[in-house]
Amino acid sequence: MEYDKFPRRDGEQHKKHAQEYANRESKERDEFFTKHSARWFELVRLPYFDPVRMTVIDPMHCFLLGIIKTQWFNAWIQTNILRQKTAKVDRELDQIHKLLSTFEMPSWVARLPDQVGYPAGGSLTSDEWKGLALVFCPIAIPLIWEEWYPKNMKRHEKENESWAKREQARVRRLAAGKAAQNGKDEEPPARPKDVPMHPDDADNFLNLAAALKIILGRSINDADIPRAKELLNKYLLGFLEIHPKHVKPSHHWVTHIFEQLEDYGPVYGFWTFLFERLNKVLKSYSTNNHGDGEIEISFFRAFLRDTELRTMLTNLLARTSESDELPSAEDAILYEAVKSIIATDSDTRGTVASLASEIDDIAQQAGTRFSLSLAASSSLHLDQQKYLLHFYQTAYPHAHIVSATSYSSSSPNFLGSHARFHNYAIVDGRRIVASDSRVYAPNSIIQAEINNKRYVGQVHSIITHWQKGVDVDICLLEVRWFREAIDFECRHWTRYPELEIYFWDFNKFLDSMKDGPSRFIPIGSILSQACRLKVMRHVEDPKINKQVEKPFWVTIGLTRDVQVV
Image 1 (tube, rainbow, N blue to C red):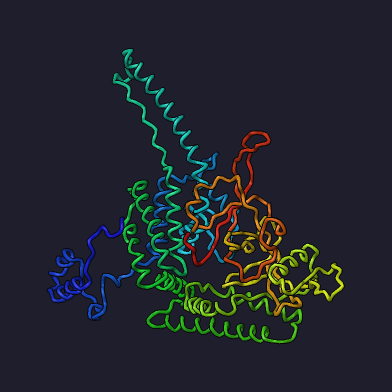
Image 2 (cartoon, helix red, strand yellow):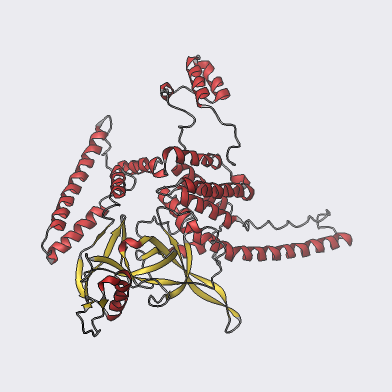
């Protein structure tokens, strides 16, 4: 499981063995394959083909359906490290389900089944395994270990004390010459089993999650590789120590991922999500029990029907959006309805259409990075005007913009008191929705890097504002920035900045005029969306010199391109 510990196979030698395999009689081939692990295949004819270096180990199957599934199901579920509830007591799995039920995630993040870990939760898709490894478990697993490992150790100590008392009583009875009823010596009581939870298991999992955050990124730099190697190596060796019975060939195969990244680039270019999604799309078509060539016709007819419907809706959408006239209420409703139909027409993630869309997104990043919903013009509240003025005076000091209530003898450039308000914005294909709810705002949590510091906040409004002295209309987000928690013990996560996990005081926000970034930021300043979870922790209250339970927010970022720290 360490890098470069096995002798490397030679591609040319493998091709020679493949040719020898082809030249042998059929009855000799099995023995030859057992000895050299080589068979003939047509690609051997290509002079540039290296069958060793160019054999790709699929990251989706190897990492998501292999390593992650082994860690979760084989190492944690089947061994009862994460236990199901009893008739009266909720245990580790149920605590995970409670956290999952309050987890605020954008709509594009794969949802885990409510009963994940139970048979009723069913099997997970690759998307769900990815979400479990990169979004949910990096927060939940350390919290579970923090709460349940001490409980399990305390229970184990009591069981050991009880066992010791029973054993001492048995020894005394034997010393007194008291035999069991059957005349034989009394058997010693069974010793309590060791606590299945290993104290380092949660930290070791974070090594894997941080490594995958880099390895599975949309882009990767050569400078990122050493950090990813270090994290993955720590995880593999840690897994070997903690769960030696569950080590599988995948744990060695993943060590070759870095050569593949060097040869083929990011995993998005060669993993098999595309083929798996296409299989899912094909399975969704009704074949009417056709066979002997008819099934292809059924597939093609269904494909053409979907294509014609999508083309018709797309053309209708284009005519509506390209019109220079202000749309009527009926047209606005039709516009939103058509957009919804197109968005929910089919699951295209991983299909050719989705792949083409991703390529277009990358090509257009230098131009338009976002789109906006239809807007309604409205006046700005006084607080909004105050924060908007602060933004303009900081970002555009040359415009000399002043409040509408200011008095000046010269010709003042008053702040515009009206703006166009949007329900949502789409940034890099992800929908950000304005929300003022402090309870549930899954599509409204964003993060930004401002003055070399990470901030996370909730988008309260999305506006387009025109101001005299500024060349263009500016699209702005009104963000209430969370206040960093200073009394939250976060030692589990500080070593893994790649995971973008941060802790905040519950329902507490920065004052943008005093200690925080501007309340209004350009929409292009967003780093990514984020997920949010409310957790309860016991902290020391200095006023009463006692531990009290206090709520916190914890967020995890969803950047596509990880910056290695």
